[in-house]
Image (tube, rainbow, N blue to C red):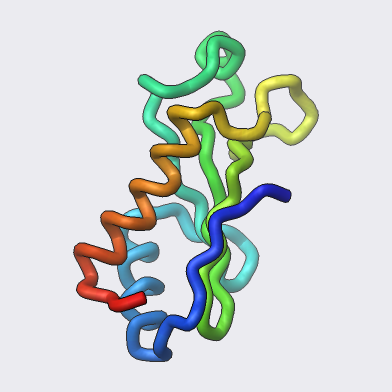
Length: 110
């Protein structure tokens, strides 16, 4: 899986990230995994056409001192479709900018 990893995060900063994600993301059924919705304006042509598969998200997984953001866009409604795919350039930029804004907003030093 292609991912963006940010590591060496202090325990207190991991708490801040968890609280941020609880407010700005969708909690998954898995512990310490969140879904972040991709804006409709940057969905692929296939994803736009597949309205029944929306919303589309990327995952953020939290470890003891790291977060990992996946460069894979998936549907929260189905796994058996042609619309989940690796990020386009615009989607990858969105994932990276999301993480950078979060870190900046929380005042985390990495």
